[in-house]
Length: 329
Ligand SMILES: Cc1ncc(COP(=O)(O)O)c(C=O)c1O
Image 1 (cartoon, rainbow, N blue to C red):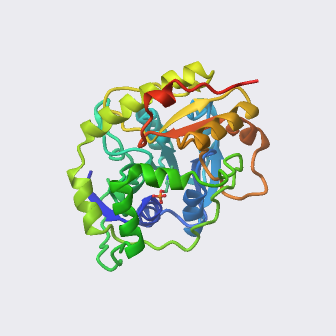
Image 2 (cartoon, protein in one colour):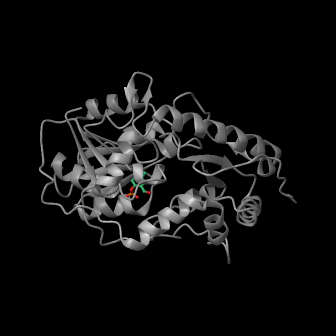
């Protein structure tokens, strides 16, 4: 890897990365059909066409569909290590090489961990991640990893500056985590069943540099410790999931730093009960992603999406919760 740029978030890293790749305007970029609206927003802002490729039930590409869509006007493919569980990088590299297109490796759901001889985020022509989303002690953070021989000076971008409110909120959160948790779950739960829950909330984002406090905290992060902590929580949640007829979509491995435990529920009614249970017991259980708003949102895809639940792995999940039983009719 040639170069790292420290920016405010993943969307900025993607935006700058696309510019550095100098992708031909008007050409197409292959994007997984399940992805957050902001990633699509960035691509469209760069005047590229989005072509969605299909995913199977384990969030892996349907390779035949991907090959079929790698046509003449396609200049780039975006792959995502969904929720922090590594994809088959070699297969993506092979496809990109064969079709002579660029590869963007999106690792916004994990950190730069070593996995099967490579480091997540470091392999594509460019890679991006979003440590601000993974680690609780960062105000900002999205990294752009550049593998091609091109550079870009980011000195002209402003530095992200956390507001006083955010600084105080963070301090209170660290000192009184239970109080903040209680406050968080007051009132009605968000409508996680909506595919557009947070869509379009950050249309006018700016590329900024990462702030120094976050940069220092990121440097101090012990990936091994972070991994051990998350694997422990994953196992507890998995035990709870088994009791409640929720199937884990992914397997956990040594060294992984996943963002979420992802479960497949029996049906939509089951999903609703799981969301309700989480809200009542002060456990974050949510849906992902908020889709880009489009007239052609695939109905079959949304039907499938409505059966998944995500449980962030940066929260406590104690024995009381692990023994919880959700009544399922
Ligand atoms: C797969 C993926 N890529 C990129 C992003 C953008 O990251 P950020 O929210 O840090 O801008 C997201 C955000 O949710 C994401 O899920």
